Amino acid sequence: MAEPTGSPVAEVSDQDFRDILDATRQFVRTAVVPRELEIMTENRVPDDIRDQAKNMGLFGYAIPQEWGGLGLDLVQDVEMAMELGYTTLAVRSMFGTNNGIAGQVLVGFGTDTQKQRWLEPIASGDCVASFALTESGAGSNPAGLRTKAVADGDNWIITGHKRFITNAPTANLFVVFARTRPADADGPGIAVFLVPADAPGVVVGPKDAKMGQEGAWTSDVTFDDVRVGPDALIGGNEDIGYRAALTSLARGRVHIAAVAVGAAQRALDESVAYAATATQGGTAIGEFQLVQAMLADMQTGVMAGRALVRDAAQMWVSGTDRRIAPSAAKLFCTEMVGKVADLAVQVHGGSGYMRDVPVERIYRDVRLLRLYEGTSEIQRLIIGGGLVKAAQRSAAGR
Image (cartoon, rainbow, N blue to C red; front, side, top):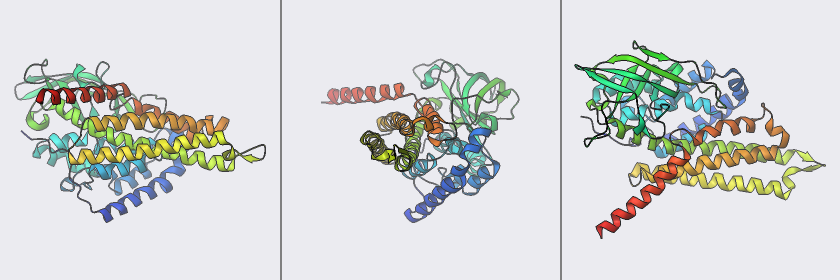
């Protein structure tokens, strides 16, 4: 049985990482930002942008070099995420599951054979991996899963329905969470399976029509008696699934927090530029104290979020906190970007409500960040419950 390796150790020197980060910033600011309106109106990321991201290694920047990726650790990952969050979130989403919640399940919990089969094509972008966890009755809490996997000799038959699955319309591989038995003393009875998208019985629904994040495609996925072999079971053990889900989601929360910081920085930059040039009665609105107060609140939120994200990433990599800190970072940063986006629209006035103005798109895009990979309410339960349990353990140990 493969044991989880946790977050991969950084394999890139500080200088090389600065070069990667600079190239990513250049890509975002010069290749993507000028085409944000095109991506929004056409609801797709253009092929040339996808190809450029693929050639830069962005589909596998968090996959270890051993398996064809760049090998960035989470401390480096969040710096990348803050740059990628500066533009339409559809571009980051395009390769987010490869680097994040889908790819990291394989990195942390897959067998060597599974890694050899899948990680290199995932890292290169030839394979799009999709994380199939969410159901109508199981989202932030995986314990409510109803998708079933029934043993049939050495094989497994998977039946169930997943919702809101990111990249499902373009996926080549689904990382599927399914219940193999009721929860018992041995574990929660949730396993993870690698299911090729072209396997008989896999049905991908139409693209969801969402409030925002145009170009980031999601859809329902149905598994209708899908038969997979024993090599599809992640880690070769059916009790590894729940742990894989929680670990991948916790890591992903730090990444999403960083994306939120990047989006908040963009909203702030747009607002400062607008306030410095737009006039009211012949006076730049940025000279009005109440406008300055809004900009000050935005700046404070961005700086606090950036510091918290970096701190949480350091604690993840060191192993000192992989539960409370990720939830605290996601809670604060995703709530913060919602407030910053709202203030950005307010600074822009009526212009901020127009579809061709960046802050209008940002306002809609970031609303989702408080929902996926664990709602704000779930983060509060994790943080509060974790603090109380730690105090109880400490008291019992005295």
